[in-house]
Length: 427
Image (cartoon, rainbow, N blue to C red):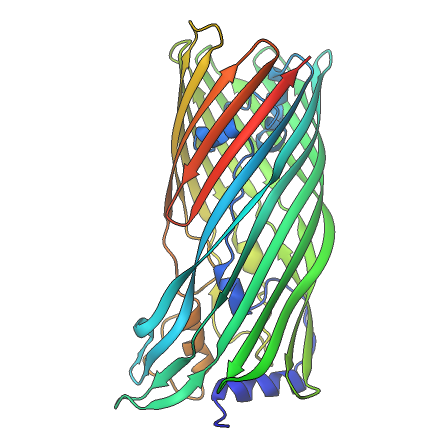
């Protein structure tokens, strides 16, 4: 077997490296993880997720609990979502070693989908406050793919170092159970608080091959629980304008990661973590008439919490490659027109929002040459390319009956399509 520099570094790391507890690992399957922490509810989805300044249904318990005070009847609601993921990944190919050029590495798409009950709630108005109990699946993703080997070529086009092919599978989910309360301070101003118990699970495997022989097996696996909270405020500036503020603290989870060389006793075990982003949101809602509604949200999402303190499975002293997820700002805009003259009012909705790139990616300068001393940086530049911001477009409709309401919505982008149906019964 012709041993590569990557192979030698793996064996050395597993033989000598001590344990380290921190954040997400540099297992290459993590380059494709997708995160979408949009507000629940088909009504919100149809408005492009812009809901912080409106917050006038039960999903306010997650988006902005101050809005719960708008609800003045007892109700039960639920939502079902179907999400289809297209996950880009590096398939392999020929990469120029000197001067280093990762541009010839192939890219492909892995497609997967999930359908689940994503939200359920019970709301009980009190004299000057409103109480809500809820369930919400705030994280749900899976993907699997198979790659070809990546061949590093010298200046003459000759193979110098063959990096590994792999078979990879990944899934994670986060379920929450919470209680929220909104309190009306005055006729125009409310505050709210939600406390949620979060349950996390992760399971991934990466089987790497060298010269068509199994080389090593990487695993991420675990279950953990934590508490998180959301605080919010809602101010009715005028009969037409609302201003909402919300801060959602992300839960912190721990899990185990390992890397073992097949056919040997060499194994590395890590204790690591998965920390959900903190989100700060500012939202406006504007009603120029009884028929029209417009909403606007700006959300600052601290995605860097997921990658801060990245744990390496391949190095002695920490990851030599600069891998990170950058914080981002979402801008969400939605509009609704209500046909109020109908026996059962009909609502048509549309929205658009910008989803900033938040993939785990190589953040350092791309090497000018690829040598045995920096082959891991070259490898990272190939496997973890930066992504692009995504534009999402949504449509939705709803019917309001005397005792219940039905809402449907769809959200489309290049990589993720989401379909939602929700209903509310009031009594």
